[in-house]
Image (tube, rainbow, N blue to C red):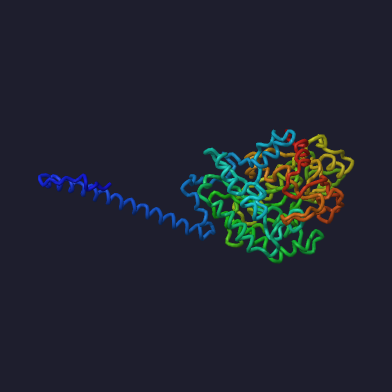
Length: 492
């Protein structure tokens, strides 16, 4: 600090001494200025590095996420299996709903996916947490250990073209809105350095690309909406864009939806689906390097393992594949399908180290209706129907299925090629309303959610098997949760 003039001596006899002291001070000040100049130069270099990083992020559409850089967490090292050696985020909002149900506290601590099913969900809707709220909570849950956060990216234009209950807010041609108002803001949040220590698993666009194989063209299962999405290419563009933008964030692990065995397990769907996923993975600037793996059975009910019959079995000279339930499918359960699809994806051009996730949230099929052994050998249909764990009326039924139960609890590396069993679909969240419900979420009424519906070509005209009195998709459905809990296998 500068000295005050009142403290300077006026005696001439001390002039020499003062000059000596001044010389010492000037030397100290010069050294101090030199240190300050070097410090300022270092700060300028640091700012230049930060600005360069900001410019790179801006090129990826994520420049505005540098808020919070001062509190940035150490970057998480890239790993082969993000679930290995890590905890998984427990959504406190789902946990509270589960714990409020009778017996629900026993499973309320299980990790579930966070669904970003519309633009407003990014910031939170109706008092619910937004994306940052979940990530901030995840940092607290992590407490310094590796932690996986599971996100569902689910808002394609013309979403879910083969059903109505999960239609979305964006029309078939609104690909630009999908990119700039949905994917870009999500990527910006995920790229915030304060979340760099989290392992963020993104499951990309459930129930989308396989529709372009199974529900288009001259097939009996085709719909005009799916034909439109095949023609305009916006599913492929949207998924490619999402993979490219989200995959640019170093701690994001993209898993692309691959349907389930009762959807694309047939010869004419299987390879075609893998090739279509590869087309999307290399669209809009993306590459296969931005695909960490695939997820099957999300929001579905296909049994993990069918142990009472196998494809090689035959009854009275007829193969199990000829049964009405299997209907010439190459797979009878989800584990065999997932492992085979992984190999098919590699043949289609994906990396050989891709992994699989299997959603086991609603495929336990336990309770009193669970078969204890094979069916009778009186006919191939009797043999399969009496022995199968999956008690749906048809493998194509998908809405709020009666009799379903919680499946295997989430766990890491449970089988060869499988990164984890997950509960990506939060148990107790409805698949769709049983009757038409006016709403501002873009969700329609699908008769497959109506218990009285007698079906369509996509489920071979079987009854829907849906529970009554269901709310809109994504809304809490207590009756469904209680049934899942009661029929859990393994039992709770």
